[in-house]
Length: 181
Image (cartoon, rainbow, N blue to C red):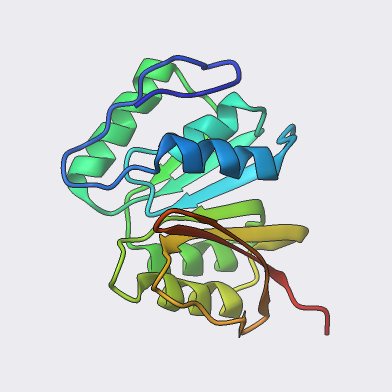
């Protein structure tokens, strides 16, 4: 797997066995939708190899936070951080719910939260519920969920509302933002 655009374009990203990396066409479409990332704080949950977050840094994000619990993935991410010589990157090797609680307690805010949890395990829905309860988005921030097209996600969850969906074969990208109260 390689970074597809930006200052790290063409650089290889090590991917551990047993994970389902985001397809290049989905990754390209995602970043076409996201547009200019200059100065953005980017959080990747269920980071796997960290490839989506590294792509965000390559395209101008000012800081990247990765959350991953699997030991093989954590090793791969650390190796990728070293290989790419990333300075504006921080890895939290812990469960997603625990990391989100900590970010909330520490008053951390993110412009973009991306998550690609394991398919067919209700993880996307549960994580959205947690994100809906913890205010870690900036005022204009939003969440992107990559999920299987048959894994239905709610229109609203806590303080979050679905505002956009895009389908790519069996993959859906669902976009959430804070609801106006």
